[in-house]
Image (cartoon, rainbow, N blue to C red; front, side, top):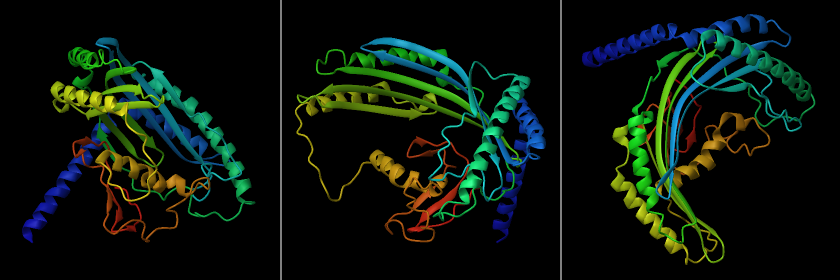
Length: 386
């Protein structure tokens, strides 16, 4: 028992030290400081309006990316670019009823509350000016939409989901984990990969039945800066690299046939070997050739066994999208799980967990920082974020 207590104390000490380091580091970040300054100034004014803006958040993304594409043994192009994006979310009204509510009889269309820029991260003064302009537009749009929602809510039928439009306040958190650089977008890696892509794409050159083909490489380093009016501050870096190839053909009936493969990684050490990729390409060529004379599949009704990727996509579509919070309040969607809290929803043989704290799962990269049990033993439980 004493050992457990000591371990718990050490864990709490480490967590507190990490939180303190995050707070200290994020306090000195020029981008975050500029975002917080403009947000504080805007909220002081917008919260006094009628209807008031009761919530405001800013997000800025800074991205460095590189792409290489090779066709028939030659580089089509090598491309590197730095871009940025800013987004503003303004909510007018109250948590119970605000401008984000979507009703059957109202379609507001797409509101433009973001901007894209080319080049490196702007200066703090430029960031403030950019956010000021976006905030004015977002706040005006939020107020207009809220008045329409308020009027329509008085005459609409009872909604399936009568919960508040925004969740309750949470304890503000700070998270600071930016990434400054990655070798995946370095000239050394790009030059090396370009030569390898030429070798891959040259394998398609002498296959007369292949109509189109290419081999590609892409890599990006993205840092996301986020602040909101409730004290949340996060800076999170993300690296992703991908090598892939695609080949297409047609059968005698003119049906389009395709084979492709993609390999994801976050560092040079995780990149697949050229031998592995060439082996997969050779197999894909044989599969595409066999499909030339394959019979069309007949409709089938019955049990199936899916491979891992197909299973992931299947769950993504039938479960993932349908449990997204905003879809429960949208009458244009099926609202499959809206009234299923604490009810059986899938087979008792399956439990579904969302654990984005894992950096990898089965060698697949993951990029998030919260964790919650989602569906356990066919019982849907309330989602809790940490």
